[in-house]
Length: 78
Image 1 (cartoon, rainbow, N blue to C red):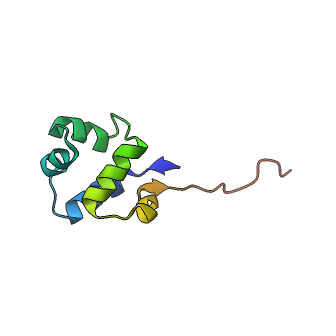
Image 2: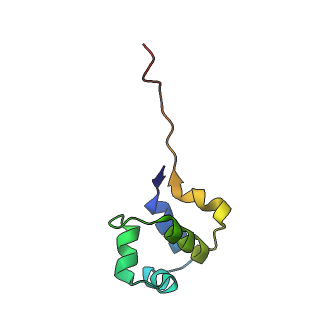
């Protein structure tokens, strides 16, 4: 699974929050948050849970931030 940073950004914007506001709620600098949202710094599980809480997204729905790709074919087929 891959974290969908575009979805993360879209959810923040949909809630009317700036990166500065998000960073303040998380207790980090805007630059530090921007690096996470840009994929320069990885977002850990606890941090993603905190971001979700700020956005008002229940932990049961945190999966909206992940791209789940399924294999198109089976490599063992000949």
